[in-house]
Amino acid sequence: MNSPLIPITIASIYKSKAGEPVPLPAHMAKCTPDTHAAITYLTNALSKKGGKLIISDMFRSREMQAKAYNDYISGNKKGFSPRPGGSFHEAGRAFDLDLSAIEIPLSELWRIAARVGLYPIIKEPNPNLSEAWHFECRGSHQLVYNYYSRRDSIINFSPYMAATASAIVSVGVLVDAFKDCQAEAAIQSCLIRLGMDIENIDGVLGGKTHDALKELGIHFDRSRKIDLLTEIQDLVTLKFPRESNVP
Ligand SMILES: [Zn+2]
Image 1: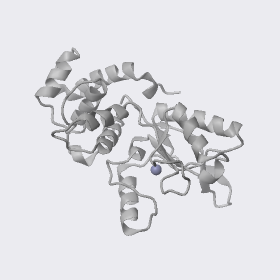
Image 2: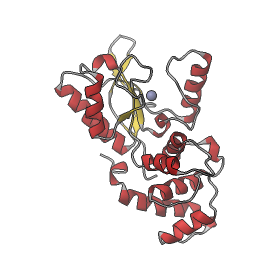
Image 3: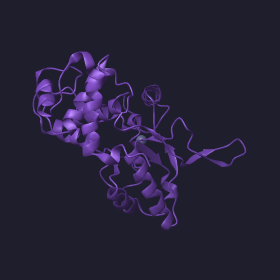
């Protein structure tokens, strides 16, 4: 994996049975290395201003995302949750924070967060809006978003869904849309982030993918797709070292 998920120790909204605050539980406390670095920066920046970064949610497995989606659909959960495959939470690239603990205006938090590539998903810094608490570190998967935004034909995903699917498959979490072609889709995600045109990320290694690999000097051989993935992930790591540098 060129973006491994690594553990993070961080304050959470959760409490022990005795009522003491506890760190974010381990099954949620996982993120990519660049997200880890950005969160560390944000924690320190907030602390200097007398505020705290307190987290309510971070990594979600496919099953956890499915539960969040079902809770949203049934009305048990207020905030929007997309289907599995559609959230940066599943890629360890998103977190939800406690806005009451930051002690600075949301607009100021946006400015600080942007310095380290953390962005909100709402349009204005209004703390009363749903999802005002959600931030994401898209990293190189923003390039997939841009790639899909530019295209006008044969689009299987929206730009946002393409970027989330790319980020999720890159950390080895299952994306249903790619069925039993997860490694192939991960290869295609790498190719787009390396600037290649392969049409859709769809898990089908066709002529365009073949040409792109050849252009990068990688020998295409269907029988060794895992080696192929490792080779191409090495190129992605060279281009985006912060995404794989484990602190
Ligand atoms: Zn969120």
